Structure formats: structure tokens, C-alpha cells
Length: 230
Figure (cartoon, rainbow, N blue to C red):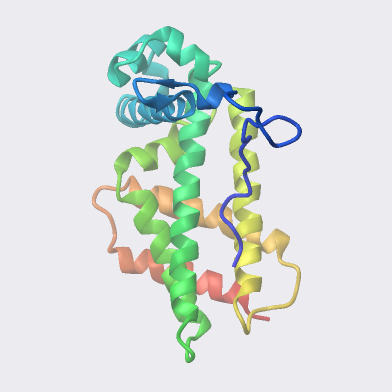
């Protein structure tokens, strides 16, 4: 089963991988019993949640750095210690939503194929349902994933398109990990599918009234099964 992320983290150790006695790295220094690394993680989490709330309700163009800081309860100095600007925060929020969604798809597929009598349609339906449920449960996720991330800047647009390629590769790799699926290279077909998937889910997620979810699941499941089989 493919991993939803191949990101690695810096451990902060010396080149030898060891510290001398009594020595601390920057990430290990503590304040009020909490390390700098832990406080950094907490700050970024607070900024992400603030950005998700404001970008996901008011829209990217209506939100200032000062508003984000007020929502997060943190300072502008702390913001610029973590991000180059609003665009980099939006890109991180986008990535976080996509990673959460891929994790949900992996869990759904893994659970489906544990049944010795599984069939491809059942696995495909579980994957599609996991995608839709994860990304559309919170309206802020829909807005940040499909609306606000588009047309912000050349850098963010490049990031969004790279994210599409990541999804296409993930779909192709996930299909190939399921027994009984096609042995063909399906890179372009996976790219076409992710385009259809995001367009359909975006339209469904922002429609009022919405068609019944089962109609969308049936449509996308049928397309995925066609892609997965020779």
C-alpha cells in the first residue's frame, strides 16, 4: 500500500548523530517544560487552524496576516518566523487537507482488501466514499481545496498543480497495490481521473441542494473500476 507522504524531518543532531554530554540542540531547548520543537509545532497548528477558519469562511483575499494572528492568538513576528506570507500558509493548509484525505483512502482500501472475497468494485467504492467524506465533511476544507487555492499566485498555482500530480501518482500506485487490477501503466488515465474526481466533488460539495451522495459515489466508483481493470 503506498504511503500518503514521503516527507522526512530533520532530527537536529550533529553530523555524527550524537551529542556531547550536557549539550542540547535548538529543538531540545525547553521553556516552561516544553521544547522549542514542540512549541513550533503547536504554533504552526494554531496558524493552520486560524487560516482554515478565515480562508475557509471569508476567503483568501479578505484575510490579512493581522487577522490570522488575532484568530490564532499569536503575534505577527511569530507568523513570519513560520511562514513567508499568507500564500505559504494557504499551501500548508491545502497540503494538510490532501494528506488527511489520502490517509483516509489508504485506510479504506486496506480495510476492504483484508476480506479474502473482496471485489474491485467494493474496494473502489470504499476509496471514493472515504475521499468524499473526508474532504466534504467540513465546508472549510472544500473552499480551501477547490476555491481559494486557485489563482492566488504563480507559486501557489504551481503548488496546486504539483498536488494534482501527487494525487495522480497516488491513485496509480494504490490501484497497482490491489490484487487483480491492471498491470498497465495508467499515469495519464490517473491524471484524467483525478481531474474528474476533484471537479465532480467540488461541484457536489458546493451545490445547494445537493444530489444524493450515492449518485456521486456510483459515478466515480464506476469510473475508477474502469480505470483499475484491463
